[in-house]
Amino acid sequence: MVNCVTFVLPNPDIRLKTLPYGMGQQPRPEGEKPDRRLQSPHRPQAVSPKQPFMHLKTTNIRLTALFILLLSSLLVGSLHCDAQRLPSARKHGTVIEQLEQARESNRNTVVDELLSYAYRFRGTPYRYGSSSPRGFDCSGFTSYVFKRFGISLDRSSSGQIKDGRRVSRKDLQPGDLVFFAGRSGKGRIGHVGIVTRVNDDNTFHFIHSACSRGVTVSKNTEAYYSRRYMGACRVLE
Image (cartoon, rainbow, N blue to C red):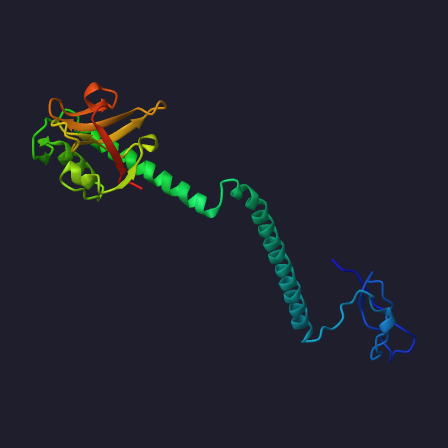
């Protein structure tokens, strides 16, 4: 409940306004203008209609400047990181060397898949003039395996040595084709196989379709093949 006090002056024609008690203001006669000095110093000032828009404009400018500064910092940091990574990338060699390494890695992957596919036919019987899983002769076996990977080889062993780049024995790699003289022993190519492994002592293993055993893995140091080796070529580069 608000207590009010009414002041009555001797002059009955003048009556003061009735104010709430305890408001901290002196009563003033009716009709008298308020004294501005008595107003609270914290009274909010009138705001111009344009002032909020000016405030928003200033805020937008500040945010834009902050965004540009942040973007510049990120760009400089990215360039710095790239500059730090450059020396470590060069440790792997020049661009050409890196391309060679990538190609070699891809070749190894294809060779692994090719040899894995060739091993599926171990034990398949030898059949002269045939190139099917029911039976293979030597060139029929190699042409069948390589065809699986999109490579067409000549149907004869003497023709297949021309299907790739000649390589020396010391440079043999798995996946290369190796050629041997035929049973006639007249110095003509008559047999072919696929290198599966090269040893440190320069000997190698190869998978092929032999007349007596069908598809099998042999080593070049075996008596029959050691004296008949005639060369090699690389089809998968």
